[in-house]
Image (cartoon, rainbow, N blue to C red; front, side):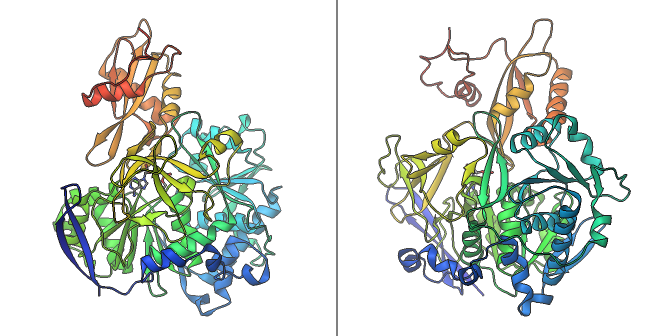
Length: 586
Ligand code: WTA
């Protein structure tokens, strides 16, 4: 049992600071300061078989290795949705991923380094397919099921994907005729019509062999390609390599505090990096038992899952916690949540109110973790052994150097806002932006600091405090949306002349997407048109990219070179001074 006490003291700059101190605890990471001083990533490599054999494959370390130990009959995956309720042991996972790899080998020309995409809702087949592809040395690109044709097309085209695993329901969102490299489509469904190109994945799995010779790769070979948004340009493909496993594993121990007897639940979808790093690789590398819950968010279903599966380590996002908080305490009281031992959060700032609420209803501190698609794994976190200062993201993982620098690259004094940067070279660092060497290189300052795009400050105890993005990236319900992608789609609508998109602060979703729109001649503002435009984005990109608010304007603020000034739109929205307008056209 872990106990906490809350201490409020006067901070250095006169602010009241509250900390949640650990009174008693028994955590994997016992002494943060000492470990941070002495730990080197090389030490963590000893946890892997390739340290001795020299043969590397993430999927081997995640699955097959455990089958050679007492974990062979241990449940790796509990899966539940509205119609299925299944469980798979580590041995089952080995057999199923081997079958998937054999199916890919038999029906496609996929070779090591080729790209296979997975575009479907959560299901056991998603996990088998992803891990089977990794066993072949193939690079996997996971996509949210919510993506519509335009979003799917951009990603498959950029990565020159050769194959995709999807469902018959999603097939009409894949413009196959416009994707010359896409040779094979594996369909997961109950009645699949097969052709040379379309393969019934479930049927093929049934008859496939359970033995497969793993493709051994280099530590630095590609593993997974996650497309994410920046403030400019199309979505960028962030490539991670097999060596990332070192950090996935180590953070599962120190941050997630995972132990053999735990039931672990990461609520994220594998379309998002959290759903692969901590929904698949991390827990399997650690030999843990994971729950995967399909279907939509619902407070009752979520609390019921914790109760039924006796979830002990729970990783979710501020948006979800805020929605649970909004659903009220009476629903909490209908469930026994006493199995929870360790609760964590990622994706957006974790509000102190939410932490307070967590203390009341779960009697647990919620541990914030900060990281990004580009960092591949957790970077700045609140650990079990450490006091939590609500509102702070915590301290860098041992082995990670983080700093706050000004625009000239100088490290700034404590309590000064600046750019949050990470010293280059951590294990799970992105190794490429697909097809975009320039953009990759521009992510690092002097080939030394990785530039996160977040602004933050550090206090005198070394805790980091998040402030916001330095660019225009929007975080809505924990999902990262690039304004450029939405604006480009808006401009395809016949009524729209100009569009500028910003994130507007929202108490539940963090931010919502707001679009400012100037109309072409012959079109008049109306509520019907707003709805039509929202539908246009929902159908063309995805529901989460659709602007919840639309405001029509005669004209939008632009630079003389014609770039929409989102900063000015934001100032309008927040009723703030617009700042320097010297580059604005008349
Ligand atoms: C934001 C992958 C505040 C941040 C996990 C970052 C956070 C972006 C936190 C990455 C946090 C993530 N507190 N902000 N604990 N965690 N962010 O790649 O702006 O989809 O740059 O997340 O999310 O988004 P991504």
